[in-house]
Image (tube, rainbow over all chains, first blue to last red; front, side, top):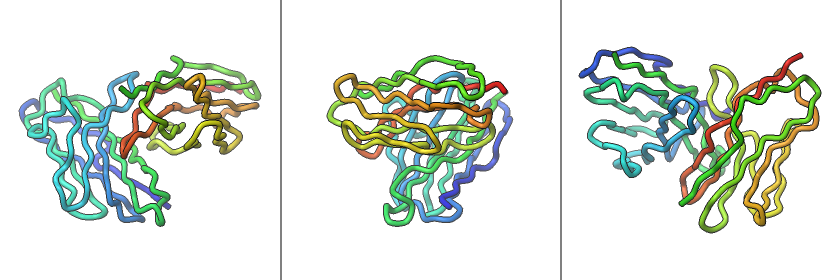
Length: 118
Length: 110
């Protein structure tokens, strides 16, 4: 149980285009979802926290107009990288937290999406 | 602020060797501490956790003890297997957020 999927697993796009990444909790309802970014040989950096039906809360230094997050349902959150540039190339990871009584209140992680902007 | 420092890898061991991966943290208050493991091609999985000082988390032969006096949460396993090869992340939680260390690659050779 407590499986989180991401789609796509990897994507290559041209500079200036937008890319959408989906994060789904497959067998539980996620009250909160998180988006992280991971650079090579570095730790995961939290980008934003989203609760279903409300606006995401972005960490300091993360451009909310560039990284659009939508959490329209209890099982789906999307991250859209708008007007992507090569410096946006990275590994993006989502996690989902369900209610404590159903999923232990812990974060469950997706396998990540590799974005390459050319 | 809150931060986590863990030993750089890769760590390469022979099967059945003893494993230690060091992790220290800086935090305000008393955070919960975690070890996550990431196998190739998969998402991070919670390996073990401890929520207060002197707690010992354990799972699959791995152990870590929450040491407030040394602000440490070192991961140990008495006898590693090839299947333990993965990336290990130490993390702390404050409020609703996780702060991760850089990760340590473990390679176990048969």
